[in-house]
Image 1 (cartoon, one colour):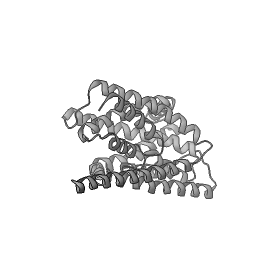
Image 2 (image 1 turned 60 degrees about the horizontal axis):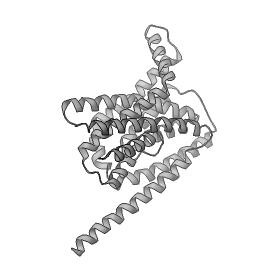
Image 3 (image 1 turned 180 degrees about the horizontal axis):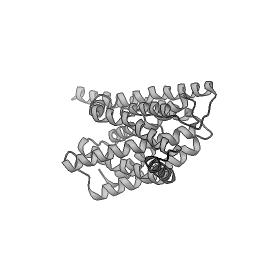
Image 4 (image 1 turned 90 degrees about the vertical axis):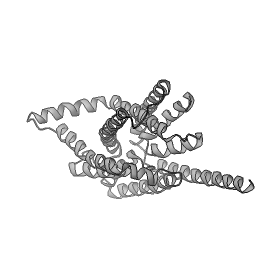
Length: 281
């Protein structure tokens, strides 16, 4: 992997981790386009760029995290409050994704992380976005408060994001919309919820690095990947939070459909070209 490829992959990760278009799906497509086939090296690079996006969440929402941390410790000391309840909700809602990730993440990657399944999931989940918006409109609700039960349901939706091509933010925001939660509020909860899962996933990945299961890329590639994913992540969070105050998920649904179809066409065209070359040989 060159520095330019590391920068482009970092930007792609930062943008697609938070926009509801699927980071894993876009990274797979980029890897195919760049001809990057070293899966071990790519896995370690993915860990690095995910750290950059995690850092972006912490910095963008630092005030929210500080309030939640203070509320949590006040609650532990016996002073129950709304922020304590939200902190507990986030922790409980993260458990399903952690359990499914530990038990099934490798299997899900084996089944879905390929050039056909990912674009198909991009298209199918686009339909879920449009359905969620329709249900949200019919309900006519824009509630600001998320109950513990609703938070856990959103957490269950987050487990679907372990399937490449789904999108963590897309799955969780859609679940929130279906329950009548206001879009920006659903997006904020989605990012806060995702940060807890990303901390757990990053810690698990670091443990694997320490054990020698993954080899980290060269330092310059590492720095470029983390830096670009962080900057792109900050931009993506800010954009989406502002965008969803006045707009729906429809544009992301249409984008996913277009990209999914385009990648399928490209993949089958490349496959046919290889087949023709073998036949001519």
